[in-house]
Image (cartoon, rainbow, N blue to C red):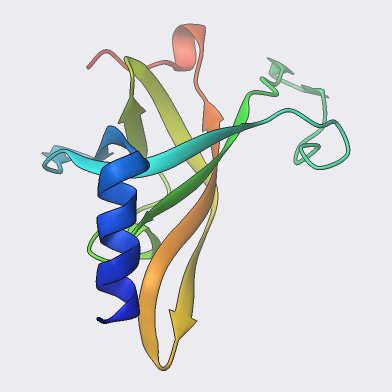
Length: 118
């Protein structure tokens, strides 16, 4: 069996239903793994305060199937999961044998005024 299909089938079994949004486009539901990154040392991606105020430290690891290319989305793309809205802080593809087998990314949960109404 091909590696990318095997990983996608496992994500379908253990993942949660998510949607990708980019502008007016919203993807069909698919399964991906979302895991909270709670350790201070490994989740300090941004300063606590900026000129605009405090930054949320709610970061999550995204692992998604090869069939949903998050690297081609715009910088304003969001992910919807369990009634929450997330923005990608970084995105990457995992390549094995010259083929993309899955995608990873770091998500930040949007809160308050930054949260979109979906």
